[in-house]
Image (tube, rainbow, N blue to C red; front, side, top):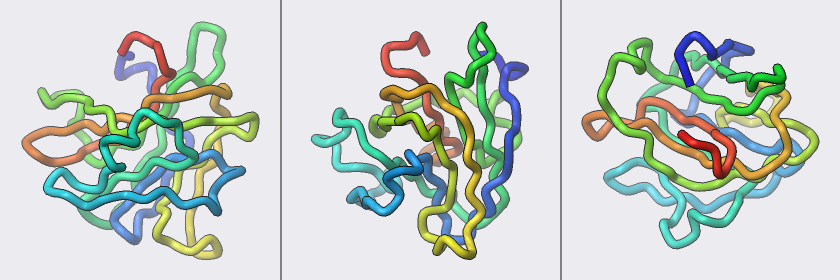
Amino acid sequence: MSTEAWETVGVVEVDGGLVAFADPMHLSETIPLVLSSDGWRPAPEESHFPRQLVAVGTGGDMPVPVEIHRGQDGRVVAARMVFVDDLDDLDGAWVEVGRLEIGASGCVALDPSVPYPNATRVLFELRPGTYVAEVFVWEDDDLALRLTPEGAGR
């Protein structure tokens, strides 16, 4: 996916050091995460099961743009939130941290630690299906969270 293909659709105001993608119909459900030296991660043995929310630490509080990638037919097929402005210049790696099941209600980007009345949430269209959730890791830092369709070449 080229850098030119990403389109900003909103901004999440991070106030709790976390960002997440979720199916908006399941925001009341919680997903157990563990904090390790690699940051917030789902338990490794559970990462192959689709979830309704995936979250990662941002390393601080900041505005984080929500970006989408459109397929050839113009429909949204992927999304990401990047915590730095030079991601495309870094030689890090995308590491799978789980899978997210998206239904017909689309997807929402948010800081899951902020209560709803105070939270900024960005709702956007995303094809229903299972998405691979990946974190971009560079020098032991998590710099982005991305969703791509399961089975797609990444």
